[in-house]
Image (tube, rainbow, N blue to C red):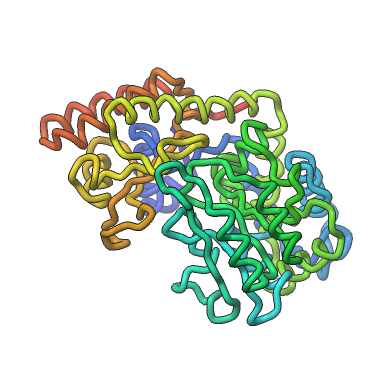
Length: 421
Ligand code: DSN
């Protein structure tokens, strides 16, 4: 566990909350597939004096003086990002994934233009055009879906038909709750057929791509990738935009990020991104990325044996979407609360064609990036799945209590690592 002597001395309230979170993370099991644990080196960068500096602009072209070291930091982050993802251009300034997507839309579209993206209920993301976002006041979002929710196959014929009809300016791939790999070739060919820019939001699987455990959309001709840096990639909270090769697109994206949307970049975060990219460039990160998928497969096997309903029939990546309503007769919200009491943190999630409401849907979403960082292998991952099934099936206090004890033991015997090098 980390200690914070100065905060302890100076601010008891915040210290207590931070220590509460430290304990929660140490003793519980994090199964939210978009979360992870960063190294101490990444935390040190985030806590550095770089937080003091304003650096509007880009390396070599800033609006304020005193940029000798911030330029070094941002240039290193950019170069490492380019190498990790085989990109010609990288913008490491977006403050988060939503910011990255918003800047990308404004860089590539005029108001009223159309984007064709994955339906949220079939695995897409709020920023891919959900009506609750302000983006939909400015751009026109149309959706494609899965053809078969039991296999996860996307309806590419329908996507092509819609694309030809509506002539989108962007064809958007990517997801926050989809457990399969996409057919990148098909996306790119449809985008080229209708003259759209192909964009993949890799936020969830960036670490799998960087670790070469998943295909890189740039190898199939995608034009742009947006991402967060804090999920499978195991960096600090933040965003990034990558461009395969088009200089004009890269220029537009830089302009949209700053001055279009953001002010001064958060240089301490950018330094932390650079440190985490350095970690991801090491051979050990490939082993980590492969293990994430092996651990998901181990969990998948247990749920398959139980004949539980997984959306798309299972998973090829880091996450599983389980229909707990059909499989165990409880709602996603109830399952989330029950498992939380057993020390397992995950999230309720809508499933494709859900008959229940978004605030208490039929599914739960969970994954293996954080447990894999803790050193869990397939044996431990499978055991976690067995414990989940026991809790979801029996649901009595004694079972939950027993599960919590075992989860705590498992967690404490796999402490969150301080270093990955
Ligand atoms: N909140 C992230 C997730 O959990 O997938 C996406 O924004």
